[in-house]
Image (spheres, rainbow, N blue to C red):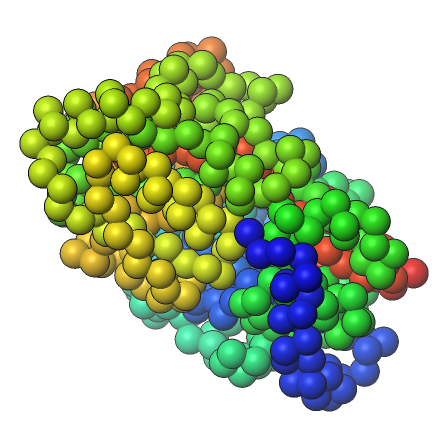
Length: 513
């Protein structure tokens, strides 16, 4: 991790540019967020990149939204019923919801969006692969028929991150598998897209035609009220610049601050610290499609066996308040917590790792590890693991790129063997990216394919939990990903802001004191 003095010193860089940009819009009506970097296209249906989701959730909305307990609540939907044992889902839509182009949302828009999401969306097949039909059975009614029930369907349509964002019919129909163009960033959210100046900012403005739901705001669910006229999302890759910018008043909010600054910033009156309620967890994805790790489960287990994940967490996040070396994919206190397979979470046994690598016929060939410094924790974890693997005779070569490049390269299996990312807390296992066979990593063994079908088709909570236990055990056996541990990340904000969302950056219902 960077030292505090060096971080703050580097923060002075770019302040003049920030002042120039921010002077263009009145500070009284503008909220300025410093993001970790330039986002990919804001077609949130196609991407699971958090940097796109943070912006996109202000523009696009879903049928349901997750409250503070990660329970799905109606948003664009008004209600739903299930018939035929859960194989038929009838969704009643809210009336009078407007798109940013002034058109009213109807069932035809939802059907077109669901169809595209099912064909090309990052998470769409988790629900729509079992869809025999989706039809507009009324102006404000959608009927989805499934070949088998899906116990998690509301959760699957409750987040824009790779999720079922509702677009106008013509946009969803014409886009196909291509990211929608900026002129078509038209949603139903409290803010509408204004402009994207590459490497400078993405700007959205208050949508005067927005009508919030009547329910009290709770997490991402409930009423969404735009309190600022505009929000400017400014890519600031250097964490020091993000910190200094908030301290100086040039940014109002900055995300993903490094752990070594947590204690000092907690005592700093010029900022307020926003620690997340639910943990994220680092993930090292193995390439299951191509290369040295394809189907080589023994070599993957050798890599995992060499690691001391507590050390990586300590280096990446600093204060023990910010991390927990937990092997369960889901944290304690949640219905999905499991101890299956966790004996193999962090063995830190170089001798055994060498033996496993030898049995896997590994002879020292370089293993390419793709990582970005935009998320400093990713780089710190990768650096620690690379040293630990060297002690076990496993040759890992780090490929360090910016986040936008990593997002592109991870979709090209010939480019890497392991890539580093993190995953936000999920309300259901089906939302975990590595259970999606089309997500980079491409884990689709016969065993996980059968268990995935079992998890999707069951509506009984106890049966689904038993299936999840088997899946977690398989994760530790086939090692499609390695969980680093639970991390409670934090952002910082101006002390003038009130109403900040503890579930993550979402700037509706936020105002100045």
